[in-house]
Structure formats: structure tokens, C-alpha cells
Length: 244
Length: 378
Image (spheres, rainbow over the protein chains, first blue to last red):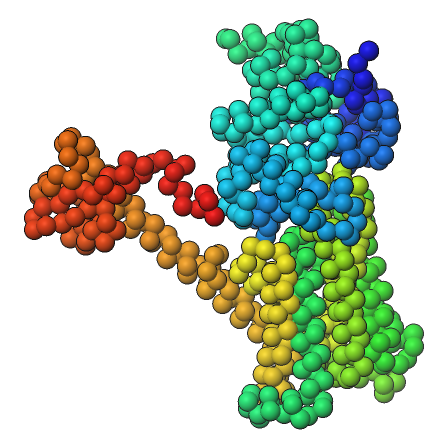
């Protein structure tokens, strides 16, 4: 049987009194490229943040390869939403990518030649090597997203969590990013992506989770990406609605 | 006394030297830590903390009955920290937004502090005079012991900064990501906030409660204009802060003992104005100049584009054409033609022009951002 990369049990998260995630059970098998889809406010980002320990859940537990997240940090990489940081921060693209190495360095120890080399390689992989010394505010939205992706690549993890990596990027960048994600899957990594564009789900992903506060369904795209689940998640018959 | 006399006196006069050194060190530590406050968008936290320190000073005096600076500042530190934790608590535990919490704590603590000050003034004790100097500060009261304290705190702060440099930087940029890497974000956060409170408390004697936040923010805001590197920004902010301290004290001492705090803050404000206007990257002046230059370049490119459209119809691209042809097109003058020639894009002879190979190539690639982006390889 295939290994379970991420296991979520009875996860419940609430802001104030309103539940954002309700009793989520989720198994993510190793080596899938999975989309999390759902309407605005469905708790997609919150699910990732709760798994990564950024938000404390009210109840429930998370296991990464059978162990709590705290013990498995180095196996996990994270790409936050691009809008979550101030891009006018005084630093360069290379410097941001280097931050991906800070986790393995631990407290106080500074990055050295080895870390710099890894960061440069990651920048090259996302096609941003020539921008390495650029101040990050002078990058376009797509370029900023690539820098974030490079920072996660440098973490050299087994599981990648990405919060809307395709948001506000042009077609070239979208293709560049999805090719990197597919490469990661080919290398046996597990990639979990919060995704908004339902059209591209069957083309990009092999696994999908429907989420709307509760988990609606999770499984292979071929089996569960259908009108029934879309209707249950979005409350309208999605395909009928756009074909009108 | 003129300012030059003042600087001569600094070398020989012990008191002046102490005061100057004190304001310089204070400016440096405030600039350094102010950079963090600015980058975390917590600029107003400093204002709230300094105002929150006032009741601590009054209470410390009421309890001990002594006007020992260290004891008063200890009181300021305690009440500043209490204010800070209340602000943080309000933000996390209630629906109130940051600005509301800051405003509430600021006015509440300051009001209480003023109340205590007036209460102390009514007391029959002759010792109470001078507590109100903490409102606007008085550098003249600095003694060697105070300067030593400031220098010690600044040194400790510098060591901590160098030690946790990487952690501070990543936390300032992306706190959520930092948390996923396993760093204790809360600890880093409290460390930074603690040092900010400490710097503010140290500055109360010199700059005073009311204006202290400007000491934190002005050097940092000015420094940000000159550099895109965090380390350089912090270094420049410390430098600007130190210079503001020295010049502020010099002006205040040489002009009839003007109140030091306000003068230092005004000098810092001059740094800010100069930086906003004259810094090469982000300053208003150079931005405007670049904008004009870009507009001129675009006009040239438009003309070149038109010339290209004529030239491509000929087999030999360097075939000369009459300048009169360009009359159909509004975007040229004699000057633009000369500019184009200077750039080696065209050649002029009499009433004729011809594209050069270089100009032709430039025109072909005018809209191809991939190749003409001059910064792509820097």
C-alpha cells in the first residue's frame, strides 16, 4: 500500500465563534500533485496554515509521515500567498531565496557558500537567475511568485504546500510553475496546492480535495472531479452555470 | 555662543562632551531599533510606549520620594512594558484594531501620568520640581552615569542584533514562513519589542515622552530612502540618529538653551526631508528627472520607429531619405534628429537622413522586452 504523506484527523478551526474548518479528515498519499478547491471563505488557506502550525486548531491533529509536524519540519516546504508579505522590504531576490535555508541552519548560524549555491540553483530552476540582485519591489508579480517558489525549492523538502501560486501570474509564469510542480511529483515529492481555476484542475493535477468548511470529497481527479462534487462544493452546478 | 564655538568646547568641556556623547548614542540606538519598528509597520507603537511610560515615572517618584534618574527610568520601563502588553493583549483578545488599541493606551496612560504629575506638584515636598522635564526632555541633565547606561544598553542591543540577525530579518519579512521553519516567532517578537521599549525609556530624559517616537521613526524613514539593503538601512539610520543627536544638542546649547528634545527631532526631520527629495533611488527629485528622461526617450523611439517603417521598404536599410518625409509625422524636431545621430542610430547629411545598422536593430527590438531590458543581466 502507498505511504500516507499527510494525515489530518478531526481538524476544527474557528476564528472567534465561527467555524472555518469543521471536523476535517484527510489522507494525502505520497507522490500526488493535489489541488484544494472550494469557494472563497471555504478555509483552503486556513487548512494549510493549520497543518503547518501557523494557526492553532480548536481540535484535531496532523501527522506528516506518521509523526507530528514539529518533528518533521525539514520534510515540509511552504509557499505563502504572495500578498502576505511587504514586497517593498529592503532585500534582494537572492536574499529571499536564501531564507529557505534558514530552517535547516537553525538558530544563530549564518548561511554560507553551500546555502548560496543552493539558492542560486533554485533561482536558475525558476528562470530568475539574472534577477538575483534585483530589489524585490522591482520584480513583476509573476517574478515575485517565482522567487517564492525558489525559496520553497531550496528547502529541499518531501512535501510542498503552496497557497495560490498561480494568483495574478501571466501564462508564461503559470506554465513555468506547473512544469516545476510536475517535476517535483516526478521526483516522488508530494505537492499540495490551493487552486482557484477549476478549468485547469484536470490538466494540472492528479488528486483533488473539495473543501467548503467541511471536506466534501478527496481522491483522484479522474474519479471524483465531477458535476456532483462541484455542485456540493460551490452550491451551483458549475458546468451548467458557465455553459449558459 | 555660536555652533563652531560649541564644537570647540565639546573637546575641552567635560559637561558638553558628556551631553553630546549621550545624545549621539541615544540617536544611534533609536535609529537602529526604529528601523525595525518602521519595517514592521509598528511606527505608532513607539509613540504609545513612550506616553505609557509617563505614569511609571510619576509613580516611581511617589513611592521612593527620590529623583534618582535610574529609579525613575525603571518605573518608566515597567509602565511602558505594561502598556505594550496591554496593547498586544487588546489586539489578540478583542476585535479592536491596532490603531484603536494604540490610541486608547496612549491617551489613557498619558492622561493618568499627567494627573499624577499635577498631584505631585500640589504636594508640600520641595523635591518635586523638574519631573515635568520628562515631557519634552532636557539633555543638560545627562551625566556620565546616564551615558554609560545608554552605551551599555546599545552594546548589548548590537550584540543581540548581530547574533539573531538572520532570525530578525526573516521574521520582519515573513512571520508565517518563519513559524513553519520552527523558529519561535513569539520570542523574536518579544526580543525586538523589549529593546524598542528600552531605547524609548533611555531617551525619555533627553527627548521626552511627547516627541520620543520621532527619534525612532525619522532616522529610519530617512535611511530607507537611500538603500535597498536591510543592514545598510539600519547602519544609516543609526548614523542619521547620532548626527541628529549631536547637531540638535549643538543648536540647542548654542541658541539660548532651546529645549533639546524638539531641536533634535527637528534636525532628524531635516534628514527626512533631504532624503525624500534627494535620495537617488527613491527621492522625488531623481524620480521626476528619470520620468522626464523616459518621456524624451519614448519620443525618440517613436521617431525611430517611424523611420524604421520607411527604411524596411528598401533593400538597403541605410538608403538615405529626405527629412521632409518626416513632416507627415509630428514627433520630431531638429533636436531629436541630432539626439538620434548622437546615439548612432541615424546619420544626417544635408536634408537627408539614413538609418544605421545599429538604429535598425534598435527599432526592430523596441518592443521586445526580453532583449532590450538593460537590467536583465545585472
